[in-house]
Length: 200
Image (cartoon, rainbow, N blue to C red):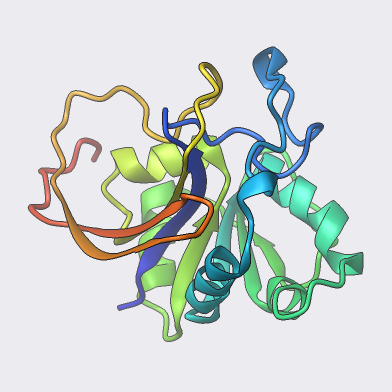
C-alpha cells in the first residue's frame, strides 16, 4: 500500500501559513508571508528533493492547487519543476471543476474513501504539500502515514497552524532527523500507536 506523506514547512510555533511569498495567503491579515525563504540552502533543498522523488502523486487542497497551478507550469526550478508538472495531482475541492494544470483530477465523494482508494493503487508515495485545511482533515481522520516536517527557527505569533486542537492522542515515532546550517530541523515521523478512528 502506498504511503500518504504530509510534507510541510512550519515555524517553531507551528504556523504553516504562507511560507514562500508575501502574497501567498493573506487570510486573517497574515503579515509574515515568505518567512521560510531566508532559511533555504542546499541541505534542505536536497532533503526536500529526495523526499519528493519518492512520490509520484500529490494530494492538494483548493487554495494550494490554485497557487501551484499559477506558478509551476512556467517555472524553471531544476529537479523540481519537471516533477511538479509531471506527477498526478488529486485535488480535494467542492468548487473547482475544470482543472487546467496537467495531470490534475478532482476527488469526488468521501475524503477518507478517496484517499484509501489512492493508497491502494500501485505506485510510489502520495505527498500532501501546504493545503492547511486538507492537512488537518487528513490528520483528524488518521489518514497520514508519514510526517515530513521542516521546522524553522522562527516565531510568527499567529497564523494558520498545522495541527488543530483535538481531543485525541496520537503518538509518533521519529524515524529520521537532520539539521541544516540555518538551524532548520528536518524531521520524519510515522504514527506509532494508531488511535481509534475519530471519524467514521
